[in-house]
Structures are given as C-alpha cells and as structure tokens.
Image (cartoon, rainbow, N blue to C red; front, top):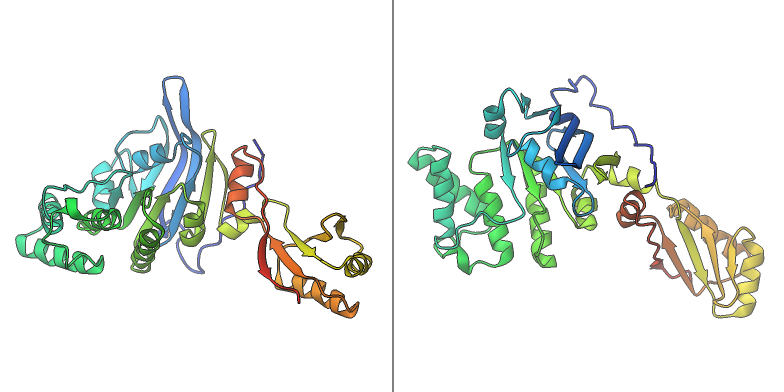
Length: 337
C-alpha cells in the first residue's frame, strides 16, 4: 500500500473553541471480529455543519465506523465523542443528538409516506400536534407532499430515499449519518439528494457520509478520509487529496507533421509520440500553466488541433491509496485553435 503523509487539517476560525466546533471526535477507534481486524486505531475529527466523507473499498470498515459512532455496536478500543457526548458514558445523549440512514431503507411500504412520518414522531414522543406540524414541514421540504397519502410501496427509489432521510430528521438531529444514501439511484435522483444534503448542512446539520461514488464525495465533502486495511490512509479536503497523486499533464495533438515538429522544438521539455503526433507536458492544469503553453505556441506561430488536460481526480487518489494503482484518463477541456 502506498504510504502517504496526511495533509494537516484546516485551522479553526479565529477565536473559536476547536473542541466546541467538532461534531465528531474519535481517537484510536478499533474493532475486530474474531481474528479479522476491521478498524485498527483510526482517528476522525469532523467539524460542525460540514460534510465528512469516509471512502474505502468494500470491507474497509466504513459501515462498522458508522455503527460504532451511532452506538449500534461498541468499539473494542479507543475513545469517541459525538455531538459533544462520550459514546461509552453517555450513549443515550449521543442517540438523542443523531440520526442514522442506513444502506437499506427503513420505510414501511404498507403504509403511506405521511403515516411513516407520524410513526417516527410517535417514536420520538412528540405531542400529536407537534408531530403533525413536523411531518407536514418535512414532507414539503423533501417535495413529498403530493405523495404523502399514497402507500410508500408506490414511491420511486429516489422518493423512498428522501422519505427515509425525512423520517430520520423528525427528531431534529444535529449529526446525521448517511451510509451510502444514493446507492441504486438514477443520476437525477442522486443530484436531488445532493441538493437535500447541502440544504441540511446550510441549516447547521453535520453529515457523516459513506459512499461508493467518488464523484459524490468530491461534490459534497468538505473533508474526506480514505480507509484502507483498517487504517486512515489519508485525510484532507478533496483538493488536498488530489495533490497527493502525481501525474497531471497536458496533451497536444497535431494533424500536420510540420506543425508537430515545430511545436516539439518550441516545447523541448515535452515528451513526444511521433506516431500519434502528440506532445505531453507535465502540468498541474492551472490556468496560468495552460496560458503559458498556448502563448509559447502562439509566439512560434503554431496551432495545435487538440489540447487535453489531465489532473488527478478522486478515482486516482482512491486507486493509489487502496492498492489499485493510478487510473489515468485524458479529458478534453478546450480546443487550442
């Protein structure tokens, strides 16, 4: 496995109590099943009102971490606080502060969406009038009012997932655990769910997300931790993680052999592919570097037929950190003409 230095966390806002701004704080969290170690002393720190994504291959321990932090199972070692409450000494206080949406829907398809919501309100011991008010507000917030009187079995996958999260929010949790919330959803439903998550965070909710979709983590997460072999292989913002993986480059392709040869002379540091008439230059993909390359071509009176840029993405990070190598693809960004 690639050994990686973890980027340092962003500093807390000036004057802020760093402990008070943490929704989740875990140190040395361990869990094993028999001789199989699932979590081997991981540390997690999640600021309030942010999205924290936990990534890793199947079996890496993502769901186990969620189960421990949501008090569904106990850790074998380490310490953790969620919502300011210790998992071991005050589990009830933790449960009162959190909501959990697992991989599989908790929606009862035999009753209506509204009845599912009211059932959750009863479980939270809300007064009848308060339960109805909260139910109506959440159904409207999740665009489910029109379907509220219909059996949940008639809902689409995206509607069921929205209802599932709405049910989780009945108790007003400050920390929300979403374990692969968009698995099986079509792209439109997935984007709708992303909008819901962003809205929750803007309202002060902290979201702890596990996902198999790296694009999802890139879109939503303020910070990401990558699990591999029971440990945190790297942690940082999406941009920090992408900078850990080398391989950014610009590719220039030509159809005119004479133009290709002139460009190779103007850009002597480029690696050549004489058969494909293309040049590759190391680059971080920044606007400054792209402009510099194009200015040098303009000065030499050369026009490339195609310019593509590759900068490492979270797929590259994931493969590099979890032992899969680096995936390299070129993505066209603009014509150089």
